Length: 98
Image (cartoon, rainbow, N blue to C red; front, side, top):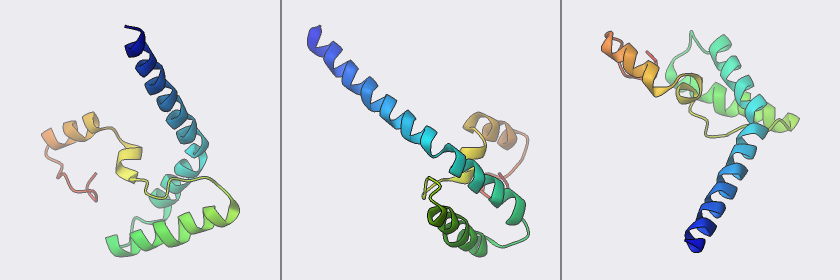
């Protein structure tokens, strides 16, 4: 019993550390999502990736704003349950549609 509680404490400590790291990058992640929504709409997927990775994330790194470099914007902006509801209503499952 005692050893299982120790394992649980370790798991919670790791989880708390991960949440702290997510919290530290939240402003950068929100800025990235906002920039993407505001400026990337009219461009194709290839150019959107360039804008996101080279321009937006590059600019944040230069300015010292913490950001998740591998942020999946669709996962960041909407939860799976909402996407599932959209799929039931006929919206395609691709990232562009989401």
